[in-house]
Length: 458
Image (cartoon, rainbow, N blue to C red):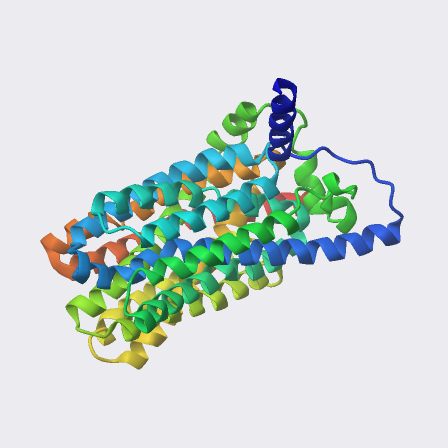
């Protein structure tokens, strides 16, 4: 019996570990066919998985206006829960990011979605605020493990010259999930006249997607008996990053030397923090502001969030294509363009906020584009300036810091609103948009200097 238990434990441990490299035995034609098929499978699996991660993360915000009326939730209660969620989410993203570099992406995705699904089902059966807080924190713990395996998968299956375009396609999963979350939640609640179905439906979807991910997700090309993506794509920039990444370094060595001591990593993370503060504040407080302060109905108010996410799809898609083609892989110059667009659109927001639904929708659409473009490019830019085996770690560190920023959009925003009204919240968003521009300038200068050096040595 003990032997059987040890065997089962060994198999489970082996499943969660990064899969071993297999020898390349396929012909060139077989490698090409396998790569093409697997790359489509990876983009489809990671895309749909993250859509579901997003739906089961944001449904709470869209059910909150009704829960406030039915259960006596206050804006401060919501702010506390949001702050706790983002702190735990950031810590989870950091720890799972470090684990992901040595783990099997397949084992990191499917089980998390299944567990999140059951958490949502239990949430829908609860009525106690302390229980809600506990479940919301537990949800944050497993939600935090969602992004690092996605980043590792995209880094391993798509090379530098094409990564911006492919990542921009994948990045639309944020917006598809963000757009579907208010629609699914609002209609589930409206059709049943019961807020609990705003958790039941997403929970069932998450369990189904988790099972699918367990079947279709894969680890690295080398674990499938394929050459690395740089070798297959003949991508010099990709191979240069591989050559600059010494093999067999410990996780600690990679994390300290190539991430913690890299000042440009911190500049990029600070800029991304600004993105997350603004994005999270708009995601979490728009519905509450328009329903409780301006008196809009729930469906109309939540539709602004959908337009915000739809704009994000455009921003993410165009950012990747622009950075690969026009800006020749310079993620930071592309980000500056979107940062300026963000400032302009935020300045116009209060002019039309109160009673012009059409103009408000257009502005939310533009803000979404201006936020999600840089959010995606910060992620790509970071994994391209660190050790090749530090993708998960730098993603995790970014997640920890940026979700501290997201936490600032919880209780701190509630306190600012209580003391300075919604005008104080608006000023906060403007300040952080300025921070994004300031942190981008040294990164652009560094990239320009690197390009000139490469031209001289070419």
